Length: 302
Ligand code: CTP
Ligand code: MG
Image 1: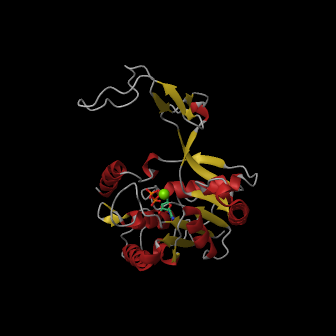
Image 2: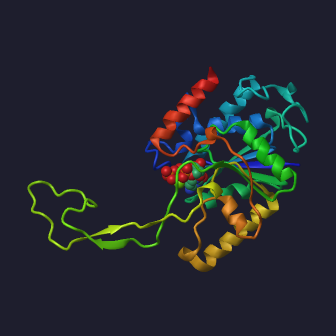
Image 3: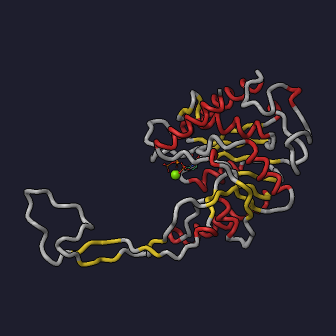
C-alpha cells in the first residue's frame, strides 16, 4: 500500500513569536521541518511526503529537504532505519501491518506553497499527493514525534480503520465555559477586577464585572488529547475536505470551525479510532515548548 504523509508547515508561528515561520525555527541546531522529515523518513511508512510551506519560503523548505536527504544518504538520519541504499528491512523488525519499509532514498518529497489557514494548506498538499492508498497528516509543529507513532497510525489504517488519531489521556481537570459571559454586580471589596491605581478614587458603587461561568460537566476520564500524525483512507480524507469546502461555500463565515482533519472526517459519520500517542510529540506552540523540545532533542543526540 502506498502512503503519503502531508506536512502542514505553512503557519507563521505567531504564538512562538520568532521572526521566521515556526517550521524554520531551530531545535538542537536543526529546523522543526528537518526534524519532522527525519522522523517520517526514519519510520519507513512514507512513499511520498508533501510539505506545505509558507509561499515565500518554498525554496528554503526545498533546501531543508535537500539537507535531510544528504544526511540520510550519508547514513546520518535519526538512526533507526539508517542511511544508504542497503537500509531496507522489508517486513523486518518493527514493521507492522504495512508490509514494507520505504528506504530513505526512495521517498519522494515535494514542497508546495501553503495557504492562509491550515485546512487550505492540507488541501494544497492533498492536490499534489498523487493517488496514495493512505494519507497521514502530520503538523511540522510536532517535530519530535517518535517514528513509532507513524508506525502505529499507519498499521491501524492498513488494518482497515478509516480514520486514526494518536491520543494521550487528559492531565488537567477541564471545565467548559458557558457560551456568553455574565455580568455580575460587584461588592466594593470584590477582587474580580484589578485594584485601581492608588491616586484614583474608588470605583462607583454598583459597578459590575464580566465573568466567565464554568460548567464541570466534562468527565476527564473520557477525554483525550489528540495529536498528529492522523491517518486516513485517502478517499475518506478527500471526501471530508470536499464536503467541508462545500460547507464553507454555502455557509461562509457560518461554517463550523475545523481544527484538525479527524474532525472533518467525523462529520461524514466515519468513526475516528485511537492509538497511543507520545508525550514527545508535543506541539511546539509557545516559547516554553521550545525549551522542552530542545532538552528532548539534545538527550536523543547524546
Ligand atoms: N499550518 C499551515 N498553514 C497555515 C496554518 C498552520 O500549514 N495557514 C500548520 C503549521 O505550520 C503547523 C500546523 O499547521 O505545523 C499546526 O498549526 P499551529 O501549531 O497553530 O502553527 P502556527 O499556525 O504556525 O502557529 P500560530 O497559530 O501560533 O500562529
Ligand atoms: Mg495556528
